[in-house]
Amino acid sequence: MAPLIDFAKGWPNPLYLPNHEIQSAANHVLNDPQSAIPALDYGPNLGHEPLRIELAKWLKSSYPGCESTPQTLCISGGASQNLARILDVYTDPGYTRGIWMISPTYFLAPRIFEDAGFYKRLFPVFDGGLGIDIEAMRRRMLEVSEPKEGTNKEFLSRLRFKPPRDDDKKYRYIIYLVPTFSNPTGSIMSLGKRRELVRLARETDALLVTDDVYDFLPSFDSMKLPPRLVDIDRTLQGANQPFGNTVSNGSFSKLIGPGVRCGWAEGINDSFAYGLSCSGATKSGGAPSQLVAAFIANMLAENTLQTLIRDTLIPTYSRHHVEMLESVVNLLSPLGVTFDGNMQRSGGFFLWLRLPAPLTGSELAKRAKEKANVLIVAGSACAVADGASELEVLDKYIRLCWTYPEVEDIREGIESLSMCLREMIDENMPQPSEGGSTS
Image (cartoon, rainbow, N blue to C red; front, side):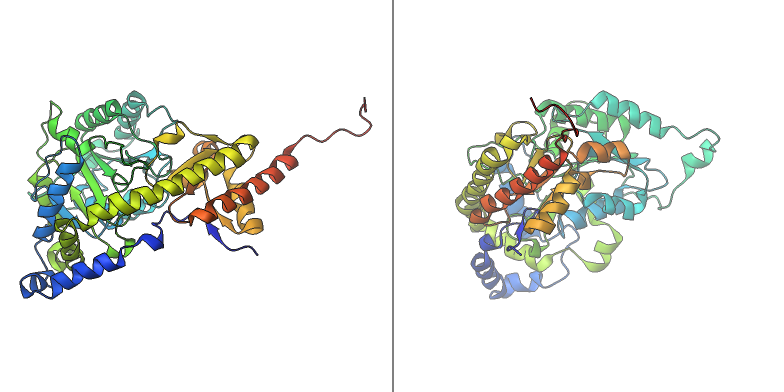
């Protein structure tokens, strides 16, 4: 069996994990009692204040129109832990009607929503590469909000599973998306669509949860970040919601390493962050990732993290990206594989490819694993729900991660995929009928 080549894991490359930088930050924090004692304590509910101070500075220097402050930020245990905490605090399965997710979606997110009480209430919003249809989404949300015929509307309007509290609110809907360098498509949502979504969220009492975990990893250093939805929500006229209608879900996992288990949430004002920090688990257990937060605060204050991103991660992952693009163009495009949109728009970790009909991503993933020891993600795995129409559409695609494999393995892995594709194409070629003409 050939050595494993893994295009499925959406992980940072282990060669670029900043072991020495983390060790230096840890020594700096732990060798000084003034920093070591707070780092080893429970910490304030909002999270380690030095990290919130440094993080606010970094975000303001990175995003256009950003007005982050230490009080608008709440430190988390990473993006996935924070998504679960947002649902704990800001939803109630009795009041919150459903979860709307841009399809295709990050394939491990649906389970988090189901665990929060929204099984069978996940609704896909299709993005065919031209952007989502906001009006169609609005109509569908209104349909879902209406109780089914025969339902006791009065009972339903009063149904709650969580007690009312002054330090938070419950939203009628959740809209989940990865607007910049999307997982899995790598796409960037336009500024116009971002504004439309904020307006829709305000109209419908929805909370936009944006996973902004890939924003600092453009494939080209000159690429400018678009404004986050939370920044648009702050500045767009017409805001009347004390807690706002957006939360930015950030993480250091893709930048420093998944093992740090540290990230942040940001709402439009102090109220949202404070409400999030008042979850029962945080009040009992203290700030998430308190010790690691102290290390990261030092890395930001010393410009270590910013240097790592600029001088190592962006140029290195750019080489990975270019190698994968060139390999796909040279080896897969002649077989009918196409890019879903502009292949140069990507940053983040992923390439989203459409297979020639009638081939399917699930069959290619199975064959590549069995015959070539190459792992990929079939597009159907990125479905929001289990509806046949969504699965059928997405199974025409595959997702490839370019950051995790070594550069030299990328071309070899794409060559193996091309051989598997050739086999599948040959098997689907119409066979000549017996006794047919030989002329």
